[in-house]
Image 1 (cartoon, rainbow, N blue to C red):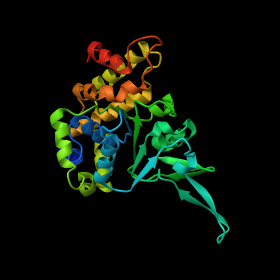
Image 2: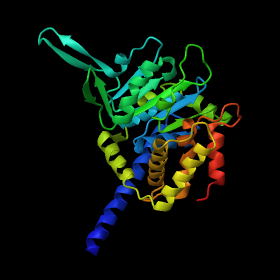
Image 3: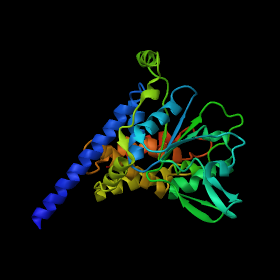
Image 4: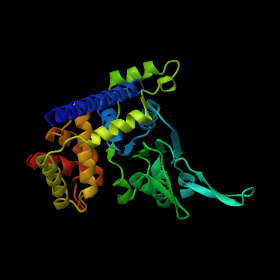
Length: 319
């Protein structure tokens, strides 16, 4: 019996090592294109490993779409891009049933949401009804059209972008949709040396055009299964719960149980990235702001943001 337990432990250690190596390889590959945003790249890679979806929000021109494309090209799977516009219809996202005159039957023509990696560019330019077309696929990995259920590919990840400056002819994402995104990331402007490096890299062919995949869909599925098995002890689970409850006590809308689950899964992926098969409080703290802040609605009239509330929770909640 003890030999079997030792063998199982060894096999799991190997799986964690392989998944961690894959995470670091994905990070390095994306950084062949993206300069100066190491933390954001790690955040998006860990979200992908944790079966999460990511919202990138920032000013125009800082590399949101390029980051999403680099992640997509790093995985050898199907990729679709949805350019959200005010006239985009829900069926333009999910697909539609079309009548085949030869067979005299309706056939389902899948929309761009049926891909391993889906880039939703400028998602806040589409009306809420079209935005919500993504909800079912993000939460349940399926789409229902005319009462018939269609499953999206596995693995499946949505990386959406939105402009934080222009508000004309845009539609704020509803709380229900924001809650489906595991993380919301902000890139910011690069430092002077980093911007110079960006300019050097785009002389000639842009590096995104020659970026090769470093992971297959099977590799990603295996890594996700490993992440899901990472050990989370009771004291760490209790810590996550206390953080979530703090936000509920200090905001108009705090973190839901879905947010607590997202933080736990993100912490599992962070542990694997660091080569561990178990979660420590540092993993939770590293992932808390990007995983929780966008889910919080501060009290009306207050000056505190969701980020402020999470940072205060981290500073005052006992481990």
